[in-house]
Length: 542
Image 1 (tube, rainbow, N blue to C red):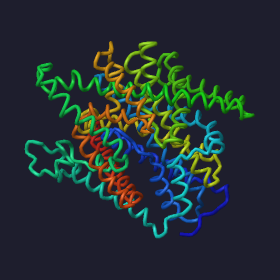
Image 2 (tube, rainbow, N blue to C red):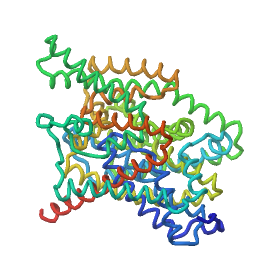
Image 3 (cartoon, one colour):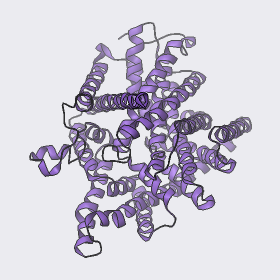
Image 4 (cartoon, helix red, strand yellow):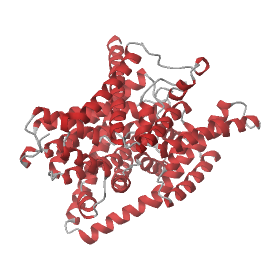
């Protein structure tokens, strides 16, 4: 491939914006489906960079900066979808209702706030502190090097095709069974990949992307619950059967571990990072006052927008935007250092604080959590994009324009997608377990904190304190989630994590990451499109 070059005025082109927004819509759809299934969304920036590189190179007369503008727009959908699917399904799990309009509003406000509040961080974190932002740097390296012969693009699109055909055969034509019953399962090897749940490539591919550490902790949590804690509770006579033991003790402990880990992580890493950011600005930035004034003006605008379009209480809107402001900053900083953005943890922190202080009703609390979660996710995602742009000498203002436009597009898509998936497949079921939303539901719906939940919180906080000392991050969150989500999800994810070990040793990581990303996007996109068609057919019939 020829070296990419061009004028800087050729960055923000109509085709880059249009194709980027189309890509953002597609990423939003498949990320929502995959995230509801496996409880996580991987950074989409490398995938969108490769797609942008392939598309604009095919169209001709492109340059690296135009490509980074398109990929900036395209990657938006992943983290915006994550913020919604980690929080909003809690409303349905509580038996309540939320409209497409309310979901869209939360996505729009959270997305805009996340972008606005992280713009001032670019100079400090990327230029002065030179934080790695690993995926952003990898995307820049990919775009700079090009794709000789289109080998990487062919790998990604081939895997996408496999995932798409698989999903269509299973869900569209019914040629593959959607569920395997353990009682009738005879082939032991098949149990590793299905374990009685819906047959899917997504958990296995997700395990490859996540890696052995977190999938191992997740699986250990599942083993602890299903093969140690629950059998012991039943045999000791504490509970009548396994289902009661799981709901009465194991599940609250797991959720408590997630909450305790969230609080510990914020106290040990989040608050120090906030102090560092503001300290750096006071001592090094001549334009701090002006930037903070503009940030304040935009924050007030976000409060007004959130209040008007949702009709919610002004106090709630203020809490939501202040929480989004703080967590977007922390999420961006943590992403730069660790290449991980525990956005759901930041949402849980603000959610707990709001509930304890104000006791809002369920729907407003979930919308608040969504805004904070999206802002934290967008903070990390946009700084990854800005890191790639900085490496390629793109104008930040052009990336800002692309990001803002794609936030609007992704927000318009996610509400319809989420409602369609809930009505056609059922969010919170074995098919789409939505593990993070389960924890949000427990916090919102709780009138008092149970002893099991408090015990889990203490365990999670202690485990996180120890893990951070050894640079293992928020691994306790994975263990806690494993305790309360269906074990049927944990097994294939762990298998994927083990496969990643072999892949890394064979030095084939980049190749198989593309394969895994393609499988997830292919199956996820077809799954959403089939759900939308079914939803539309039912709506027309009604």
